[in-house]
Image (cartoon, rainbow, N blue to C red; front, side, top):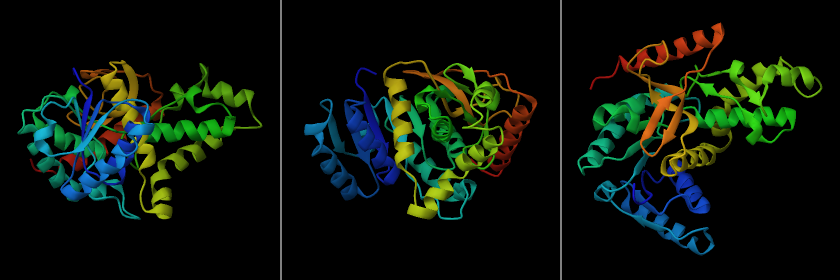
Amino acid sequence: MEKSKVAIVGTGFVGMSYAYALLNQGAVEEIVLIDIDQRKAEGEAMDLNHGLAFAPRKMSIKSGNYNDVKDAGLVVITAGVSQKEGENRIDLLNRNAVIIKSVVKQIMDTGFNGILLVASNPVDILTYVAWKESGLPASKVIGSGTSLDTARLRYEISQYIQIDVRNVHAYILGEHGDSEFVCWSNAFVGGKNIKDVIESMPEQIKFSDLDRIYHDVKNAAYDIISRKKASYYGIGMALVRITSAIFNNENRIIPISVYNDGIYDIEKDLYIGLPAVLNRDGVHHLVKLKFDQTETENLENSAKILKSVLNQLVF
């Protein structure tokens, strides 16, 4: 990765929220926008370029095609049809799997050998589809997974206890969807376990609030979609965080959709949201957390649900 170049496939709300966040944070040197609607990609590139005078660094932003991905260090796939109101993420599968396979084939036909990051939903299933189609090592194909869900969790906790969200450390794991769960046994605020925090701040947060927080996080996408038809700013920021971890070789732990290589004793041969160490090579390794009995069962259940869906796919 001599140059931090990102190609974004799909210039819808998610793709452009990501591109806009990249521009504002000066996260990369080059951005290429690719879309089936070439004129839209051109217009989006023009619009972003007009903000370069106010950006924190010099960047190259242009529209392009799949020939431009060959030397990219990272290709982020946001293409696909969006989630409809009342529709769960698994319902999106059949509509988006065909799109992902086509996109990945065109990417790999260029000789691309960087990292693939999938943000299209249902992300765990589609990341698996992308991995199978690409032929790349599993460490170089990842999904956004539960990174956004985790950010939502940290925000909700911070609102209760009035502590900066950046001092809240907790994970949503499992499927990016209805079977996701909170790993409360590994939730900390400034190094203090969440249970100790609750006991020391009874006026602000109670144990009964934990279920409410979980349900608010799990239903956040549905709540946002019911109000504004789509959710995109949060995931755009999450994708930039993942991007920076890769290009800056940070070895940062982020809960993303990764291939279960046996570190966790759950269904094999699937992608699921787990904490992973990310650097310029992709996934360096998974972080093995110690779960309580309920969390262990929740992860197993989430994996079984994803495996059941995968078994219905034909490659």
